Image (cartoon, rainbow, N blue to C red; front, side, top):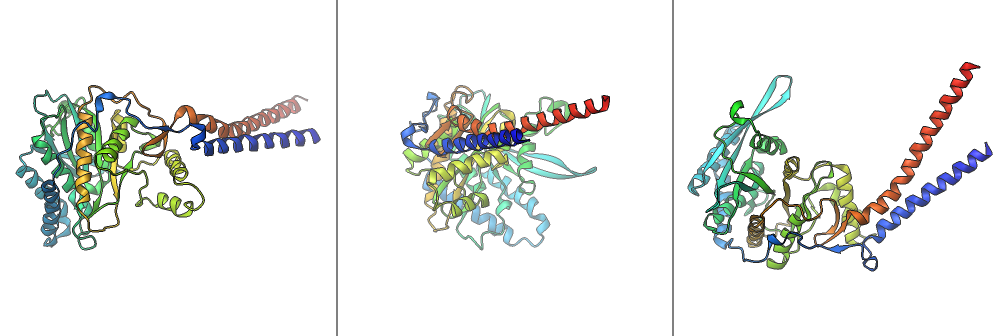
Length: 418
């Protein structure tokens, strides 16, 4: 009995030591003297994100503002709320028709309970790249105008992500550099990310002709990347990158690096990973800001979001089809400075141009990484060592429980035969 207590005490001390070493190494990961944090770089030379100046103009920004205002004027006189979705679809299609963009409706249904199903509608517009065969595409996705219905009174002079998306595709109509089609997908806001999931499922259905699934839905070629816009604001202080997918999946680091390069070097705006609309993120930075460095808090938050496995946007469904995508949001204090959204339009345009330069799938950079900020990263080779040290105590505890169970089983068996 004394020996068992002594061995249990030593095992407990070993577990505490190993866990402490793991935590200590995690803390030293961000120490510049250890050189474990690397500066981000573009592994794919073809991206060339800052080789040209984006053309998204003030007129394009005003067009986005006008679309947002006209939509709110349209629904302000609506007396029957149940007609909101129908009116929104008709009005959005009319705006796409004015821009001379071919569009189609993607009708889908989702099971609710038993045999009852709900029906929704996505809007898909297609901008064909000049002088190409349409075998590759980039997706620009956003939720419908109705997603922000009723916010005009609280946040006047704002721009919705749907209006910005239409303005962006409209500005790209004159682009001669495009080597990939651009698919604009405006999803049904009523069903959240399920609308995006259903569109991707039907888009990639190999036997859609046999099943009769949305034969009129516009299609292009293989989707190389996706950008999801999700905001409603009159101005913004920082561009937010939300890369977290389901079960902690992340996009290729080169996609984040391309957006960071366009934003930082062309528009002089450093993007962030901190989304102030996320309650968990807000709690982290409210309670830990005085105790830890900003990069430490961002790193812990990044790892926690991955561990929880909850997606941070509609882009998460792209990863199921091996498509790199992320969601772009904004941190806004509503300072009534809408000119900053021109920079946002130029950042998205520059990113689309960068992805359009790709000649193959994203593959040269990391898929497993931790970001303390948008311009530095910790690779899997560095963070797995402290992570393994923190997991060893758990493995020892499991091994101890298994051995005790086996010994107990042996004693019971021997007692039976006696």
